[in-house]
Length: 309
Length: 112
Image (cartoon, rainbow over all chains, first blue to last red; front, side, top):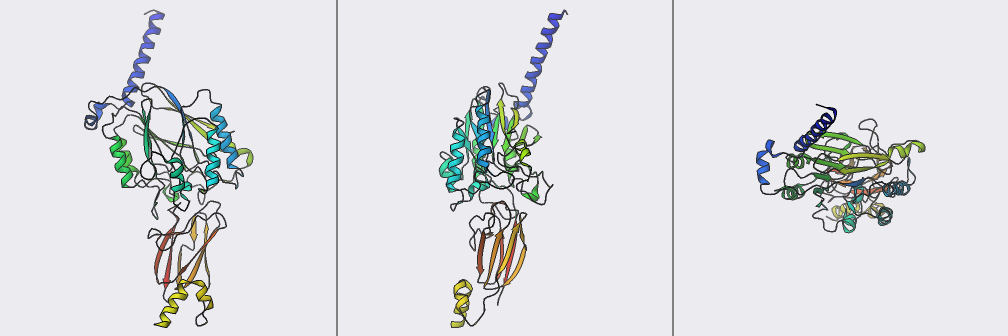
């Protein structure tokens, strides 16, 4: 084997290797024959590469230590999106748009986010449910075309996006909560969908229990995750805990995002959750946005965190 | 019967209790909200007592009865905000913060 041939051979192998990864993460009917049979006759639409952005926990209206102006840091986050090399297809905001669900807070958040000039998709955080209508203000503003308490799904270039609400009607002593109606809708939404179609699920509170004592989890998430198990690539994006954490469980990767307003303590490292007081010079290194790139074919998305300073 | 009605009214309306000379209103009771907890978490008071919650956290909280907010439900309490409720009838009243539901508390109301 001369050098040229060897290089060619290695290139071929690399390609084959990529193909193998694709097969494994693409859902592969072989290991899951029953569920795959549901999707018989439905081929997954082609996945074309694109990039989108996640922002979270902007808490517009927050003015306390360590961030006297959450509007300013949100504007810096949006400026970062505008400066990206690759123009993102859209922005997902994973909740706590506002601090107290006040109209002026939502107005300012909208105005700042609109500076990105991109379509935006929202799910509410618990801070967006504080109006007298317990979430009506959020739903009136962002919930057009959504169902129930604001859940919905859409497709983009072969990827299926699912927006879930886990901050409505929370129960005493519990954590985040989807409720039976939303779970029934999710089951219907996923039924018959090819297992090889990549799924991106976004919601506010984490789906895996990060720290129960602080309510950092979702009570009935196991039911949702059971429905997603047969899919080859599931990416779960959330906010709420104001810090970047990741976990991989089978074909599901969980990513909790930084806030654009203030950090919170690592689980269990303080008496309570809440704004972590850090020196002004350090604040922006703990705030940020997330860039998610969908790759062609089917490997899990590539995730890049980027801080405000 | 008249006495019973008066007592019930006094328990329901703080103003009525203040102006009724027969029975002095029970002292005000404060529950502090701090570090994502209610303090004291469990409280025993006499019927007719007004309980006031004060949010001392730098994060908003709420006070909502566990019967789905039927007995009492505060608006959102930002830092320093207060919410008061007068417990007219005896009974056990569980409550929680509807934003941070792991925060729970209880008020036990004894007959006067």
